[in-house]
Image (cartoon, rainbow, N blue to C red; front, side, top):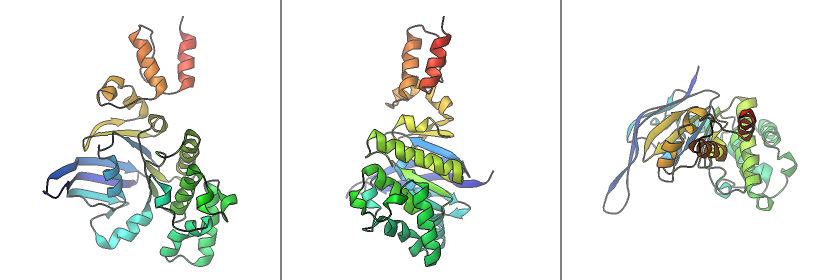
Length: 280
């Protein structure tokens, strides 16, 4: 399979104060992400997950090691525009990413900066707004939209640049449950229908359940990695790290402690119902 992202031996250091104290935010990180893969990265605040996300978009450069995006090294300044077009970034607060007073103008902003012809920009804006289910709001002011709608506009602005990969840094952190569902459904649709590679940084465990792969970070290091079933079956280890697990998985864990025989890798309500119905 084609490698979309390759992170090799990446360490990132920064000075935390005026005294020059150095913090090691990433510690010899190694990750490969294939084209079309949906990867979710979870961890506490300060675990390094957002720092890693910014390396993929070349907002930060490694102190040691290398990051390649579709074969382009983020340390090469002449590749920065190509890298940021290839790996679009969606941030936690959509208000920090929306720059225009009309929705369609905001979605057009990225392609305009890439020098795309006007006729093509109009096509891209319409297609992008259709993709995120926001075409009817094209003439509205972003300030009139809900948080979830604003985040979908921010995503439309990224996909209008035709990226191969989207990196989302806590995109649902400021949203209510309904807004979170809308945004995650949109991301899944892009991954499934457009084969866009997705790297989703989150602290909501339920968002990680449907990923192809889950990476758990702690103190700048990768401490667990695997499919959602492989990762979330290690409930005790995740709890020791101070992390949550999906509610259904946690319920199964507690029931097993009471002597009820249930699999360790239950992730959904439907799976739980099926297993409980099979109990004698």
